[in-house]
Amino acid sequence: MKLARYHFSPVASFAALTLTCAVAQAQPAAVQPVPDSLDLKTAISYALEHNFAIRQARERIKQQEGIVVEVSARTIPNVSADAAYQRNDRDISNSFPASDQGWQINLTASQALYAGGGIRSAVKSTQLARDAAMLDLKAVINEALLQVRVSFYRVLLAREQIKVQESNLELLKQQLKTSTDRYEAGTVSSFEKLRAEVAVANAKVPLITAANDFRLSIESLRQALGFTTNTAEFARKVPEFIGSLEFTPQKFDLQAAFDSARVNRPDLERIAKLADSRAESVTTAGSTRYPNVAAFGGYTLRRGSTNNFGDSNHGWLVGVQSQWDIFDGRATAGRVAQAKSLLEQTRLTLEEARLAVDVEVRRAHSQWQQATELAEASTRVVEQATEAVRLANARYNAGTGTQLDVLAAQVELTTARNNEIQAFFSYNVAVASLRKAMGQADEFVTK
Image 1 (cartoon, rainbow, N blue to C red):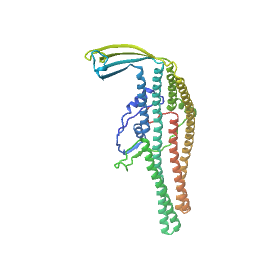
Image 2: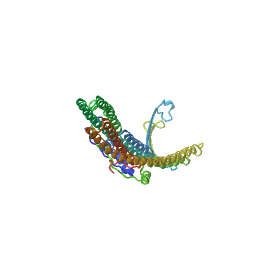
Image 3: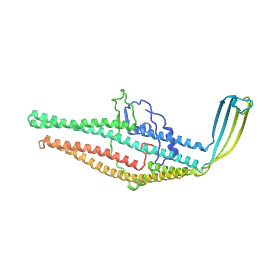
Image 4: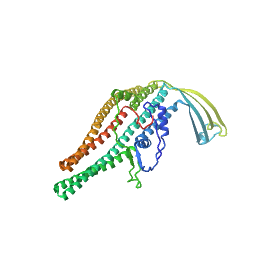
């Protein structure tokens, strides 16, 4: 499976984003085979091509490009041609001698010379809207890739939970074997053997649940990737997921996170561009207060009607025309008021978005702090719980401990292991969420 790679920097220029969109227009294959193995980097690359939100954002850029072309058409000469053919009764003909048919061909070119600034502002407004669509693509990519990361981490979490439950079940089976051997030797009662059997039976329930969580997490990842293949050939195939949940401490300063978000968040830049576009729309709406002036020229060829059908009149023409709505019932004033209100709404939206980003950064930073502390604490607890199980088994084998001590220690170890992998999962998710809140691109998207 050959995957494209996209390049984004936190302050990528519009030109670079445009080039990225152009490169990424290839449609995905109708059927993609389930890979034998999948790592996070490959998943990120695949999502850049196939994630539906990203593909829709690219289409919105294409839509805005079309709008720019449409509006810009008013800045260049427009050429049109029209033709007419007429056949009528000779008695109503105006020509002499009478002619019952005629035709005319006109070729005209026109160029707007002045429109009160409306054309320029309309073009500028659509260009800013296009730039906003490019920033929207960047924001969508950041959000989509965060979801891919979280989904991939959740697959790894479910896989590790299966391993923990399998390890727990294996230890309980060993305990059952020891209890059975001692029961047959007559050194313990049947109650201890029964209690070990119950513990083994109870341990199968969380293992079944973990296996189901693993299957469901794969489906969530498939949705985040945009992987649509679900044919009979690949319906039961599960790739080997490469990677593990690790705790690699990182440092994030809260003030630096705020500063980064205010500069690099593409959703804030997008709203700012839309505000600039709205400002240009105010000029466009008010341009109808002024006259429109256009130059035109053309060529006309006419036969029949006013002359013999065999003869023709032809020639060129040039001129200037103007239109001015001196009073339009305050329609222009209404359009300007609407445009100004939309501008103010967009500015308020920008302020609201800045507040929301600050809150998001603070929350993400707080989650990172919590996840760091939990990850550090859980690692120590696993070490202690492992030692407790070893001591409990040693005491039981020496006859100084009880079976209940061993089972309790094993339950604590299983809980500690589950807490550790959950803490590692939460930490990796917290780091990815904080980076996204700061406006940073995914680390696997080459800068």
